[in-house]
Length: 457
Image (cartoon, rainbow, N blue to C red):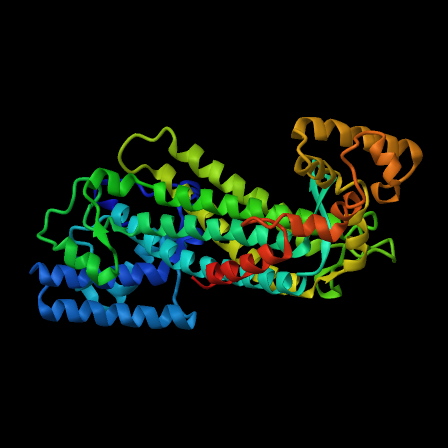
């Protein structure tokens, strides 16, 4: 018998029963469903709906159900549709008819809403901790690379020299924002929907504030219609997850590019690479490529739930059953990503010599030569034009800036003196960018201190 079967004369069609069942997806909510059911039993006891003996018997039975689930011995029954009904039916087998009182004043609509919020709050804690571990790995590698210049890029063209440490710390900043977004999402999910019933609120004198305290929620929902139909907290999580995935993808894109023979800046450890089934010489950065690839899942999960929710009238609709698959998939994907990134990052072998050579090539200090003229009193736009002409001259001569003679420079401006060549050295270029947030070694050392504080928060 279905828990809703009283008004029906005809049994469900087996194909419809299979199609509408959600147990295969929502069974992972069992710890949270049990916690919420235990709290609801206590709330019914405080409200006088359950006697003390009835409440104790239900709690005892739920404890036995928990033991079965923890031991992997729970008899899941797909025909019972979902995890809520499976637990309730097993409770009935344990304690008898009194189990039927547990659902008094409660609907599966507010039941699933509270389960998902509890699950999300736990997942956010784990993922934020994982992101902090990724930050720590980046910070540790950055601390090793304080004297390692590399080319900075715009448009994938060499632009200006930066420290490798500075580049790595950029991702620490991104992940700090990701952790903030997740925490804000968790805070907005910290609202108790239980007690909202199917849509109109429960008809029994439940102390919802006490129930919220029992379940660890900051506050209670203020509108029962909104409480059972709201999935904003999941959409926010999926949006935050998509941004995290995008950041992971950009880091992976950097690393896979740097690992090419054309760049040669980094080599992946054998432990985080694979070979080719046909080409014996290949070493492929599969772990990084899959981080990049899985970001597409995270973006897709956000779009999927937004699309599901966008046309739904209030309050609950069965369409919302489709919220769990993208939610759980994003949790699993994020946890996998933040699990593999720290050991992957710590195993990378950077070729700092090749990076330094690349950082010094390609006229990367041309902006510093323009800045030299600015310090001599020339407006920047004029300085930019003059240095552009010098670069053109050097290209035509097949030389780098450092290979030009002073007379070559003075053909374009009489403001050039011998110290101009000091300004365009790699080390001088790095030292010059000493503002807060810049790539000068002193600034990056300060940034490392701040980054360690961010990761520890």
